[in-house]
Length: 72
Image 1: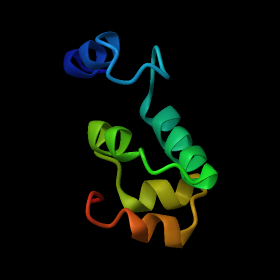
Image 2 (image 1 turned 90 degrees about the vertical axis):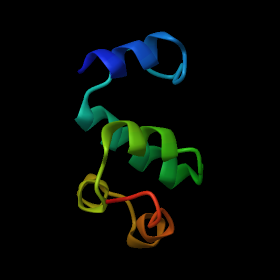
Image 3 (image 1 turned 90 degrees about the horizontal axis):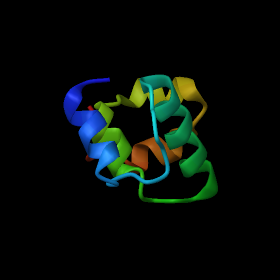
């Protein structure tokens, strides 16, 4: 994890996680989408996740299409 990501997490921008890998971020986004939470924008943009990664992580096609504006 780069310095900026560590610093952002340390400052409390994302209090849910203390140490986060890219794979953990994908799992967290998928879990949030399945629960119906819409605040996944921070994680998606922080890690630069793609639609393909989130779909492979187990998210539904409809939920990923709903994030279309922020995904690469």
